[in-house]
Amino acid sequence: MYSLRGHHLLCLLGYEGMGYSKEYADNMTFLHQSLRKHPEQDISIVEGPDDLCAHFPPNVPHHCTDTNVAQRDRAILEKLDLRVGTTLPWSDILRRISSHIHSTQLPAICSTCPWLSYGTCQRGLQRVNQGEEPLIEL
Image 1 (cartoon, rainbow, N blue to C red):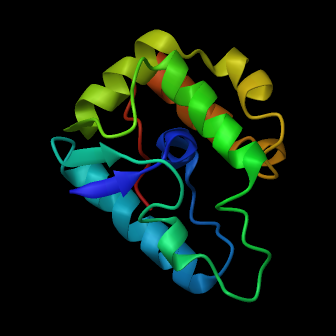
Image 2 (cartoon, one colour; image 1 turned 135 degrees about the vertical axis):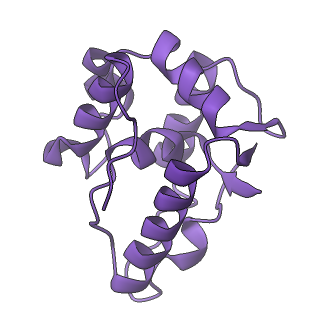
Protein backbone atom coordinates (compact mmCIF):
# COMPACT_ATOMS: atom_id res chain seq x y z
CA MET A 1 0.00 0.00 0.00
CA TYR A 2 1.16 3.52 -0.79
CA SER A 3 0.37 6.68 1.17
CA LEU A 4 -0.48 9.71 -0.96
CA ARG A 5 -1.71 13.20 -0.23
CA GLY A 6 -4.40 14.89 -2.31
CA HIS A 7 -2.41 16.80 -4.90
CA HIS A 8 -0.08 13.90 -5.63
CA LEU A 9 -3.08 11.98 -6.99
CA LEU A 10 -3.08 14.45 -9.89
CA CYS A 11 0.71 14.87 -10.07
CA LEU A 12 1.13 11.18 -10.82
CA LEU A 13 -1.14 11.46 -13.87
CA GLY A 14 1.18 13.92 -15.55
CA TYR A 15 4.50 12.56 -14.35
CA GLU A 16 7.03 12.43 -17.19
CA GLY A 17 10.26 11.74 -15.29
CA MET A 18 11.08 15.17 -13.88
CA GLY A 19 11.62 15.83 -10.20
CA TYR A 20 13.35 17.88 -7.54
CA SER A 21 16.37 15.55 -7.47
CA LYS A 22 17.46 12.22 -8.93
CA GLU A 23 16.39 10.39 -5.75
CA TYR A 24 12.98 12.08 -5.80
CA ALA A 25 12.47 11.32 -9.51
CA ASP A 26 13.63 7.71 -9.08
CA ASN A 27 11.12 7.20 -6.25
CA MET A 28 8.31 8.86 -8.18
CA THR A 29 9.15 6.79 -11.27
CA PHE A 30 9.02 3.61 -9.17
CA LEU A 31 5.63 4.51 -7.67
CA HIS A 32 4.25 5.75 -11.01
CA GLN A 33 5.23 2.58 -12.84
CA SER A 34 4.05 0.36 -9.99
CA LEU A 35 0.59 1.94 -10.19
CA ARG A 36 0.64 1.71 -13.98
CA LYS A 37 1.30 -2.03 -13.80
CA HIS A 38 -0.90 -2.70 -10.75
CA PRO A 39 -3.93 -0.38 -10.81
CA GLU A 40 -5.58 -2.39 -8.01
CA GLN A 41 -2.78 -1.32 -5.63
CA ASP A 42 -4.28 0.24 -2.49
CA ILE A 43 -3.69 3.91 -1.77
CA SER A 44 -4.07 5.38 1.71
CA ILE A 45 -5.05 9.05 1.60
CA VAL A 46 -2.96 11.02 4.08
CA GLU A 47 -2.65 14.58 5.28
CA GLY A 48 0.80 16.11 4.98
CA PRO A 49 3.98 14.39 3.83
CA ASP A 50 3.50 11.06 2.04
CA ASP A 51 5.57 8.40 0.27
CA LEU A 52 6.67 10.92 -2.37
CA CYS A 53 7.53 13.67 0.13
CA ALA A 54 9.75 11.17 1.97
CA HIS A 55 12.30 11.52 -0.85
CA PHE A 56 12.24 15.32 -1.13
CA PRO A 57 15.84 16.55 -1.31
CA PRO A 58 17.17 18.02 1.94
CA ASN A 59 19.01 20.85 0.15
CA VAL A 60 15.82 22.29 -1.44
CA PRO A 61 13.29 24.37 0.50
CA HIS A 62 10.86 21.75 1.78
CA HIS A 63 7.30 22.63 0.74
CA CYS A 64 5.61 19.44 1.95
CA THR A 65 4.27 21.26 5.02
CA ASP A 66 3.47 24.53 3.21
CA THR A 67 -0.07 25.89 3.67
CA ASN A 68 -0.55 26.39 -0.11
CA VAL A 69 0.19 22.72 -0.68
CA ALA A 70 -2.18 21.69 2.13
CA GLN A 71 -4.92 23.87 0.63
CA ARG A 72 -4.37 22.23 -2.76
CA ASP A 73 -4.62 18.80 -1.11
CA ARG A 74 -7.93 19.71 0.54
CA ALA A 75 -9.39 21.18 -2.65
CA ILE A 76 -8.56 18.07 -4.67
CA LEU A 77 -9.83 15.67 -2.02
CA GLU A 78 -13.05 17.68 -1.75
CA LYS A 79 -13.58 17.50 -5.52
CA LEU A 80 -12.97 13.75 -5.42
CA ASP A 81 -15.21 13.27 -2.38
CA LEU A 82 -12.33 11.61 -0.52
CA ARG A 83 -11.28 11.93 3.10
CA VAL A 84 -7.93 11.59 4.84
CA GLY A 85 -7.70 8.06 6.24
CA THR A 86 -9.55 6.48 3.30
CA THR A 87 -7.90 3.51 1.60
CA LEU A 88 -8.97 2.48 -1.89
CA PRO A 89 -7.46 1.01 -5.06
CA TRP A 90 -5.68 3.32 -7.49
CA SER A 91 -8.20 2.27 -10.17
CA ASP A 92 -11.05 3.68 -8.03
CA ILE A 93 -9.15 6.94 -7.63
CA LEU A 94 -8.74 7.13 -11.40
CA ARG A 95 -12.48 6.64 -11.88
CA ARG A 96 -13.19 9.44 -9.41
CA ILE A 97 -10.72 11.75 -11.11
CA SER A 98 -12.25 11.00 -14.52
CA SER A 99 -15.77 11.77 -13.35
CA HIS A 100 -15.06 14.67 -10.95
CA ILE A 101 -12.20 16.76 -12.38
CA HIS A 102 -11.84 18.04 -15.93
CA SER A 103 -8.47 19.14 -17.27
CA THR A 104 -9.81 22.69 -17.79
CA GLN A 105 -10.22 22.98 -13.99
CA LEU A 106 -6.56 22.29 -13.26
CA PRO A 107 -5.27 25.89 -13.57
CA ALA A 108 -7.74 27.02 -10.89
CA ILE A 109 -7.15 24.05 -8.59
CA CYS A 110 -3.36 24.10 -8.89
CA SER A 111 -2.72 27.82 -9.44
CA THR A 112 0.08 27.92 -6.83
CA CYS A 113 1.93 24.85 -8.15
CA PRO A 114 5.34 25.55 -9.71
CA TRP A 115 4.90 22.54 -12.04
CA LEU A 116 1.65 23.80 -13.59
CA SER A 117 3.40 25.73 -16.36
CA TYR A 118 5.03 22.54 -17.70
CA GLY A 119 1.60 21.27 -18.77
CA THR A 120 2.36 17.68 -17.77
CA CYS A 121 -0.46 17.37 -15.24
CA GLN A 122 -2.95 18.86 -17.66
CA ARG A 123 -1.90 16.37 -20.36
CA GLY A 124 -2.25 13.52 -17.86
CA LEU A 125 -5.68 14.69 -16.76
CA GLN A 126 -6.75 15.04 -20.40
CA ARG A 127 -5.76 11.39 -20.97
CA VAL A 128 -7.93 10.34 -18.02
CA ASN A 129 -10.84 12.51 -19.19
CA GLN A 130 -10.61 10.88 -22.64
CA GLY A 131 -10.52 7.35 -21.22
CA GLU A 132 -6.95 6.74 -22.33
CA GLU A 133 -4.11 5.08 -20.41
CA PRO A 134 -3.70 7.44 -17.44
CA LEU A 135 -0.01 6.80 -16.75
CA ILE A 136 2.48 6.92 -19.58
CA GLU A 137 5.24 4.36 -19.89
CA LEU A 138 8.58 5.84 -18.91
